Image (cartoon, rainbow over all chains, first blue to last red; front, side, top):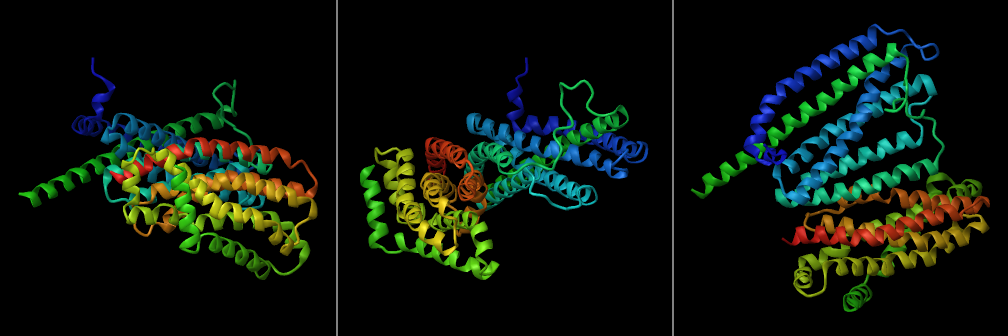
Length: 243
Length: 218
């Protein structure tokens, strides 16, 4: 029985990810095109919000993936701290810029929607503010990776930062609720609800959600491959210098 | 460990710039605010709680690179690491020394600066209480940030980027406590919440800081 941990072997990881990458990228493209085209052009306008409601097909999936990307980095950092698998550390490093971009997309689409709907681009609402803080956490994490030369030290320190940052991010989330009453609506999607939103909006949204999920997976696989190749290249150059 | 603490305090007093600089920064920051927003006392007393907390937070931030940098450069940190004193203890003592040299003077001087900004009278006990309870958390978080970046050359800006997001919960509850105190509302709840954050930071962050120091000393 093959163990999950054999993917910690870079060679095995490269082979498996090379096989998975076209599939995940393909499914992502398919789901994104279907979900977004369906959502943008073949759903009715909302009764009150008009066509602005269609931003949901980009806003909600990117917001969900922005948080999930941080969770994935947290798990990968834990695996690195506990089991010292280099692939795991590199995957965390590879996921950070992707998560950062998802955060920016969520913030930007939210602002675009908020302008006509709330009459303001920005409101110091707990949800909006916590995303801004998440953005800052991503920036700090990436900056720390860039600042440290030794790759192992960088992996260790960013992992510690990710663990501590997660705790403080959660505290901030609750502190913000305390600090200001929100303008943002509550969670629209939850797993235990009978029906979250009307089916016409629901099906394209689910497809777009899957598309963003697979897009994240494909990007992280691809970027992790790049990191591994960069690491190998560095080792080869060092070898040649020694010879 | 007590020796480490007294050493840090002695260095701060004798080498100069220990107690004075962050206080002077706090003072000049508070002085600059009326130039920025105008001298109307109504506006000033509205924003005073937030400004005083922000000033204290930035004053703490500015002194962070002193915590480990000199000891790292002259090798003291390596000596301590090979001594029987645990690095966790060192981190805790460094945070304590930072608090005594930075946080405590800020707490003491804050009422005077509150007068400058026309802070509402009922808010003064809350200002002192919240700063007294909150600045230890700022020192503990800052020590963690300093430990992370001790090996980075010119890490001053990086420390700000890493530490400031971690300061957010403390700042929210601290400023909220003073604001509510000024308005005569329930100020105890945010104070207690902030106390919880302080206790949690003091309990956990010395370990995280020590882990970061071990990586940097490798």
